[in-house]
Image (cartoon, rainbow, N blue to C red; front, side):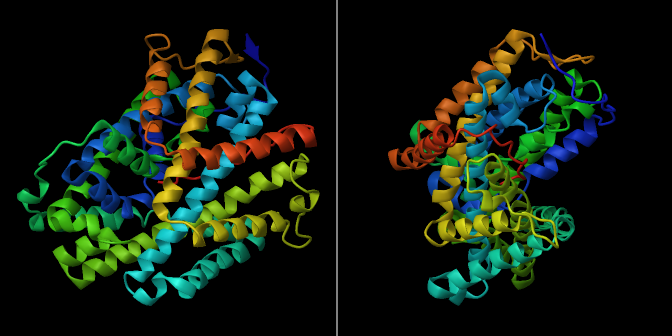
Length: 443
């Protein structure tokens, strides 16, 4: 069975190392500046185990995305894969999960941004001051993105590299301050505890699949994609585990109580005031870039839903001067603000990850079904994973393990959103479900 061609054949110019670098870049984000403290709180010195589980899970998930992407010519990533296999309604729900994941991740990182500032100016960390900082942050990015896409993308470009330098410097320069006794694992965690920690820490790995959107432009995808995923995921995992180990080695049990900016506390203990300033600045830049990128991307999903009749037509309004979806941008920022001022980072990370894992699980099934049906783009050889459906089954098993730690109230929130969206889909009967934009990494 062949999927219809939608245009000229793309040039396959992306090689192994270029793709690996792209996956690495979109994966490493703001989450790693906050998660070492949560990892230590839940698992102590055993926290690196959760990073390994997350790396395996995301590696399997991305292989499923890569196989599906090599068979479906349409844009839209997971939305497209799900819709081709299961139809418009399932595709629409996939779009809702993408939007929910991005919204909660953006709110979570905004909370972390304020917490990072509060490590320098404690008065900003609570009450009215915290709300005002959140409003100022989101208001600034709303203003920037309403004025035009070009201004929004420039902010993203400025922040794209700055996130790595502070982490590398901390790992290298803080090594002499690591104490072996702080790394001793006195009690191995139970499976339930490990699952719960992993469902939080996987926040730092989210977004890796977005680097595979241009899979039609990869040279020899059957070899390049698995190789690039392996290289990138090994690199990301080494960076994350090294960060966790150094943080644990410097602070020991104190890492679990290090507050909203654990790496800043580590840097202060190992390097002094300048180290703390470096990490606070690096984390701020990384989060600044992430929130900027999400303010650019997520409102396009609301805009598309409005164009298709799911949301009021007013949300699809285009600014007469700047030609941007200004109402969707403002609505999205208001939603993110309300979520951020009423939640904690951990709560939002877990629910965002639940949304993502549900989507990833459906995509793994879709990839399996696309392979079974023999769907392929005309004139191309799709990526065919070895050992039949083994990768798809393992993906679902690992996702199932992670989901065992989800609490009933977290399930209720996500399922409630899907129920409301389903009702609106049936009542509104849109012409087609909206294809969401590709979101950046939450990691």
